Length: 221
Ligand code: GRF
Image (tube, rainbow, N blue to C red; front, top):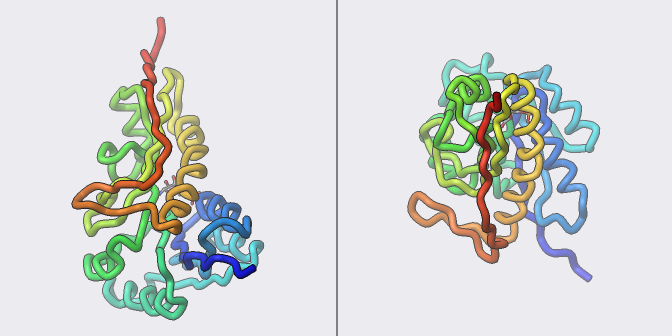
């Protein structure tokens, strides 16, 4: 029996690549509706490149330092992506700001994962700022990419409590565990054509209903 066509995705990384790994693991299941056709890193020493190599995935290193400006760097990435006829770009710890031209060309075909409940705590040092603000919950967000950083229609979020004795490291670890669940799930839903962008929001067909609330009082004394 012919297998259904899988969505061809590219994963862009700059470092550790644990989210890349979660996508590699998901795609290892032949029934998963997407497959990784290439991994692109702007850093030659990104640990994620080893993960891709171990999985037998083609990798490309495109160093931003080899290009005079962002436009030229983005054009080089774009050319690689077009060569693979990529259907979806997954930014997974990719630490370069992409030009509005590039972002608009891939509008609704490029997603990102961010370790906060967006639109709160955009940008870097998320967990430090989350703890500093004294909020009781944090989490992670998978969203479509728009030209502004960490902006765009939200596809999936997962929430975790912020505990009284959390350090940025313990909170990051709790959030990361959820990142590894929701990123493959977002890709799965997109690959199954169940995700639609309507204005500034995303609607998902046949999403399981969720009810209830979590209450976290925070520090107890
Ligand atoms: C993750 O926390 C992700 O949310 C953020 O950058 C980090 C990348 O980690 N965008 P890894 O490289 O996927 O392990």
